[in-house]
Amino acid sequence: MVAIDEFIADNEVTFVDAYRVATRSNQANFFKESLLACALAASKGDDGFFTANDVLEPYTAITQSKKTISSYDDHLRRFATDKGGNILKRRGGDRQVQYRFTDPMMQPYVIIKGIQNQMIDEESKNSLLRQEEPFFPTL
Image 1 (cartoon, rainbow, N blue to C red):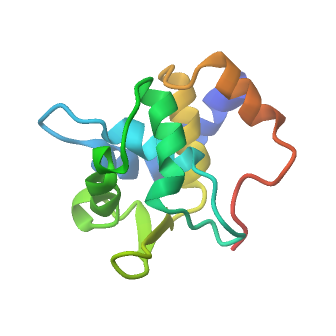
Image 2 (tube, rainbow, N blue to C red; image 1 turned 90 degrees about the vertical axis):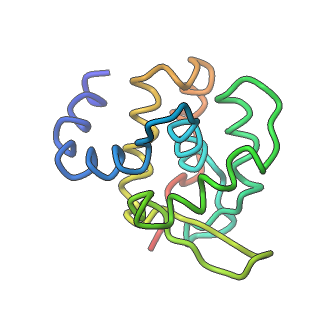
């Protein structure tokens, strides 16, 4: 966990504001869970883009309850606007929308925050650490 803490400390100034803006709200919400699910979503190609459907499995695992895309779809749209800090980039039309992190280094930051906040269980964390395929997009 020392390496994780060092990564957070080294990048805190760069990422903390973007993370805070993306997850800030005066009302109860699941922005942190939605953003973490985006970070864990499997992208379809080397460009790092994912769909709302790709977010469903990690979102359901994080919230530990059966969910539908409508549970977080507004969050994804919000993350791609000024209100959500433009933490995600959006492309495509209404039925073909895809997202990716605007800054590719935000993805591991969000995952690490999820681990620190105990939003990722031990089995999932170990699975992330054992992945053989490249997890992060190449740009």
